[in-house]
Image (tube, rainbow, N blue to C red; front, side):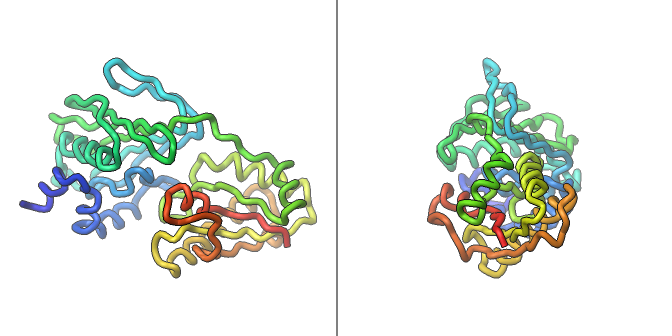
Length: 281
């Protein structure tokens, strides 16, 4: 059986792809539109595709093309994937089947599937997640497929400047849930309100000097995580400088996986460990 057929039918399709073509995915990711990222539920895209358009909203509604259509509210992500080499097009059916198998492999189900669209549902980190893949079966010349993902839940509450200041007064630091592109230091658009409140807090305390300290989970190597956390800390510091905060008030540093808050053996624990802390100096 060829590598491509294994990719189509194996229930752990993403792992097969990583072993057989992971380098190509990394090269494609380097050409992605700035600020974009694969969704954590699907860390391995179809081979040869780059992200040409990306949108992430902390809270929005999307009407999934199930039968009947289902409107779902929550954290919304839309990703457009573009194929660099049209000769490598796997076909819309292959694209949709791969995402269906990836969802079923983690306990999810296919809610609807037709010649153009697959709609799926899965529980992840205690939340209900809806996924739609748009990829036409008959139009093999098309070089784009689309992902729409909604993670159900209440609208995320952004910690306010006054609450940040109170936490720093009480504990000497405040942890920020800044979202980055997977494996990168690109800050996702959904974290801009949080950074705006951080800048507001620093403007209200003009004499406060802080460390901007990056932390990761233990996925990857210690050296790589140290480097990544330092890059993310610098990215947050740069965003605060762009918002009007003097650079000399900020000291970015990366601790990698050295200072976990929770158990890295669970996704919930790893999510807590991926953070940026604003620490009083």
